[in-house]
Image (tube, rainbow, N blue to C red; front, side, top):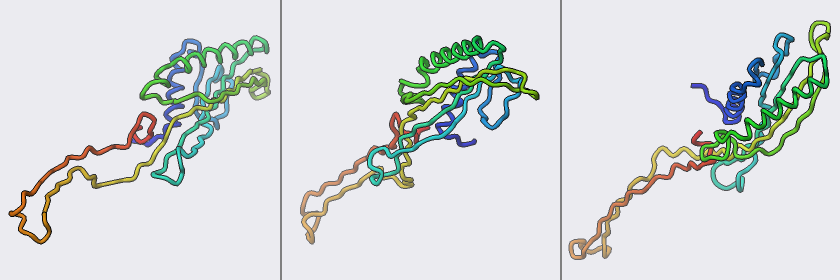
Length: 204
């Protein structure tokens, strides 16, 4: 099984939801920003992982490593149209539908097992240009970046031998025959804490 970071899982989760939207039925999809976009791929939708910032969750020098994760994603929506105004209107419609789909989906956020803890920041721009061997195909592109708070990633220490039971016997008074004094024997079963919580990445 291939290990995947939580930031990449979130990217793929957002893409899977976009693919179910009727508006994007005819679109080609990609998560690889390095791939050149060809004319035959129009219309096009790409969602990319850009970077992830990890900042201390609490005091950095107390306890196990714990980080607050903030991931930045980039979205590219490209359409082909000779009419620049019509192309921009198409991009705007795509952007509105995209945000409505992602921000209203409770399986992405606002529940106990949510992937995204909060949407922090977004930036949108529209770009116009052309593609093709002779740059004869006019295109319009919506570029949208979205910053997501992915909660806490923690790295609890590896403890191979948990303290699960404590056995206590009294020996009183010291140096005397224990049979002369009533002694006490007790066994305590201890509940072992896993260290996981709702926001912890250790359970993901």
